[in-house]
Length: 175
Image 1 (tube, one colour):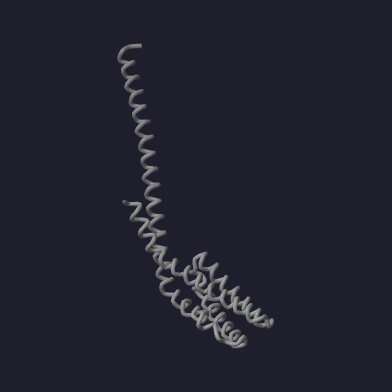
Image 2 (tube, helix red, strand yellow):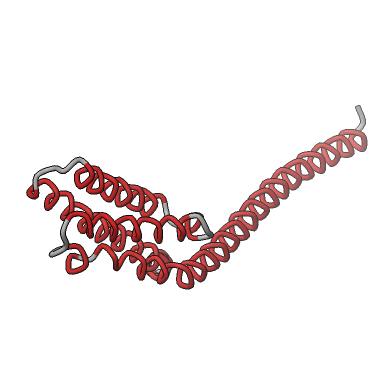
């Protein structure tokens, strides 16, 4: 083989290797860029949806807060059982109405569970009243309703504080 042919083969081989390395690096860089862009867009979309959810919760949650006022301790005590049953049924109807609208869609899983806990506690108290249970059992059920109302309100407050916690998390991750 002549030196010119050998030089041409070596040059072609080097060019081919460089082209393959360049193509591999370029492909890897492009993939990483696309993944980074996709992750950024996904994060922006989630942030936008979180903001929209938060805005709707700020608008809708106060109504449920107001409706749960029927289950304050002061609203539950010092009522004879039959009057308490009427009061509880009215309060249950009010929160059920709220839940059947967009409010039920906005509750976080934790708040939704607390909402169901409150409904169960109300129904348990109504059952105790309807079955003429002793006053101490009715009092314990009344207390359970009050505690469930408090846990629901706490979960809703956490839902409303989530946006600000997320902001703090982003700041800590940047820093």
